[in-house]
Image (cartoon, rainbow, N blue to C red; front, side):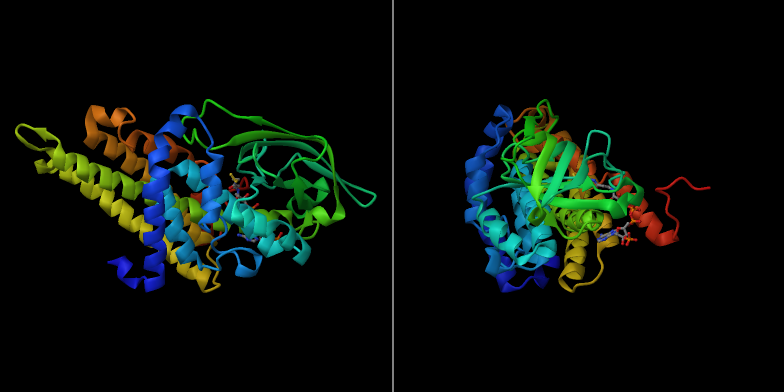
Length: 388
Ligand code: COS
């Protein structure tokens, strides 16, 4: 059993997260989903628990946990509500992680303690209306001005975009330099020319805040630059190494939730005078979910061990993200099948699991992008550029 490898401290981290999620996240998930309401109060509670900066150093307000411990927390939050798990992933992996890795001492002091505490939210502005998988090909422009930069462009599908106090904005400074011209800026969202609009009508993650952002000649000081000019693509890719890990861990939580709900339902629900768990075809669905959950969990733990050892982990993170996200969709689909008609309404969490899982094979790199990263590593051939 893979959990036998956990230390006492890691078990405690998991138990505490499980209890918090069962008591505070699970009871609110359905209503927030129905109302399409971002629960800012609960998101701040995540900060109180230390779940918004778990791997951030304690001197900056984090908990100084390793990636394995961080993953245990994310898995539990993902089981409870993927909208809240998205808050954890974005705030911790994409925003705080990038500031801690690339920021100056002043930037870290200014932003990290409040972000880790949940007193402020941050968002990650990479994707644009015309720039998704081809992340290096941004249209947002940053132009040098006296003492700072002027940024114009649009960002799309930005989680926490409407509630964030600071946005990491990726922009091109010199199109001729392609990905080496990109820069990342810490843009206060109160800046003149910074506007957001809520995106509604989503299939899932309805309780997650999602924004379209417009930057109209937003001016920031030189001190807003995160890393050097030209580091932008590396800032983004290193953030995604952590973000994809976090999404994968959250999806293990969905698989776990599917197993728990299905076992409980199948042992209580009777047909033909016996619990439906007596039927081999129902047990087969449960077994398939368990195999997926366990394999996904082990791939996530492997990625964590590499990260904690300071080893390269981009490919192993893609393997974990690909498998865990596809498994979450598959498990949720099977779980609905086990629940029958009851799984099609929100009396049980499984229909929400399916709707919420569906985006995870899209965001932070589609399943196809993960396969191309894995395939490039195996063959040495980059299939992401047209081959001559
Ligand atoms: N960490 C740090 N640097 C990295 C890195 C990583 N994980 N991965 C790549 N880089 C660096 C490389 O070292 C290279 O540096 P040099 O310019 O010094 O050579 C540079 O970045 C370019 O690397 P690479 O050639 O791998 O980039 P590609 O253009 O081939 O990357 C993919 C293409 C598809 C992998 C990338 O654009 C991608 O991940 N796209 C998906 C974007 C995404 O996930 N969007 C979701 C947004 S968040 S919801």
